[in-house]
Amino acid sequence: MQLPGRSSRVVLDAVVASCLGAVYLWTLMPGTGYSGDTAIFQFVGKVLGVSHAPGSPTYVLLNHLWVSALPFGSLAWRANLLSAVLAVAACVVLRHLVEGLGAGAFASTAAAIAFGLTPTFWTQSVVAEVYSLHALFVAATLLLLLHWSRDRRDGLLVAACAVYAVSFGNHLTAVTLLPAFAWFVWHTDRHVFARPRLAVVVVAVVLAAAAQYLYVPWRCADPSTPFALANVNDPASFVAFVTGGSFRGRMFDFTWGQMLADRIPLYLADLWHQLGPLVALAPLGWIALRRRRSSGFNTLLALAFAGNTLFALGYRIGDIEVLFIPSTLVVAVWIGCGMGEILDRLHRFPQVLRLALVAGVPAALLVAGLPEVNRHHDTAIQDSLERMLTALEPTGAVVLTPNYNVSGFLWYELIGEGWQQRGLYLMPHNAGESGAGLAAFVRAYLVDGQTYRVPAQRLEVPAGLPVYCLCSVEQRGVLRNDGLRLVRIMPSLYRVLPPP
Image (cartoon, rainbow, N blue to C red; front, side):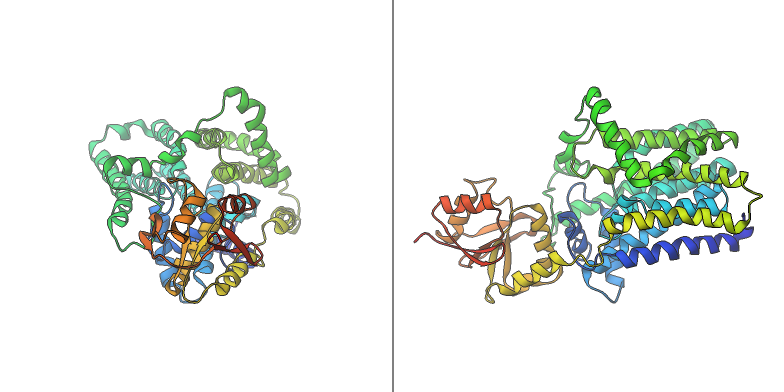
């Protein structure tokens, strides 16, 4: 059924927003946890700090405005809720995109909700992360390009350039859309490249969007910034940080043989995990778009899909599935178009039956994904941290962490929830990397009375505080082998004492 007019689109948007909004609220993580990055994103906006490279200034500034304006809920919950709101917005925009390609009301609504319930996107929509905003930028850029290709209004093209340029400040994989973007503009109307006035406006928009990265040196140079995972003090370090230089060695890290034998099967398995049998509708959607004389936009989608997928496949990281989210969004567009093609052929069927068929798609994804994604009761990390911090010395203490994730969780408690004001400090997981090793670093503080600096917090930890560790078995062995004594206080928490 195709409902006419603007009011119908508002109703359909409300259906998408209410369905997904209810699911995301139901499954939202109530506190800190999930990963070290998530924990840092839960407080870095509040304090206007700098997250890991490339800094994500768009997300951090938006996070700051959101958590500052929302008058209720814990800091972690408010940051998690921002992801849910952005995810709902991304799916609403996706619905407009699929409908604009001729899929119809039912199919576009089902495709948008289905994408919103794919396990990886859903997971990133209930914790503080940058990926729901990334999906919103991708969907909005594609929608604006679609409207521009039909209306040829300069304002739409400038808007598409602006949205796309700003998206670089959220996640640098936005660059994988650039070949598709440039090709589509050239294919649709190459004469725009020969119009100086329009070119000046676009360049000005791009430079204005790039200026957001001045946030990084500004906050790094400000001595009052309470948290910065960066050491940006000259142009070279600035360029290295904002281009993700620390991760460059992991990019394009596989041979073509490895790509064919391992990485592509990995992606296909992930795609099936996200969408299951719905993937079979994507080729039909491709054919439907060609039949509707949307072959140019079809190629845009294909280039966007290929650029993102190939880059992600060549990137050696553990949580590779989050980088596939834009590719899954493109596949969801094709699925929506394929679903619309099927519903068009079933036009003689009762509307109630067609509605039931379409509603069954997101319902099946909801049932399948809920056990994996639901984080409503995921409070174990938050609870254990609070128990541990409460058990520490009321006059102050130092806590040695075993890895980046635990450091992130503790940074959230210390900086986001104010535990540092009670005299608690972090001895980060990498404390001994630049010196003689972990045991020597701890001994220097505990036995020799030396102070130490936490670079991320720009502070010098005073000497003389008791030392505790949340160390791994291996790290505890290293400390004991150096003569330090460990006394168990509670599960995973040990007091570190000088040699007898």
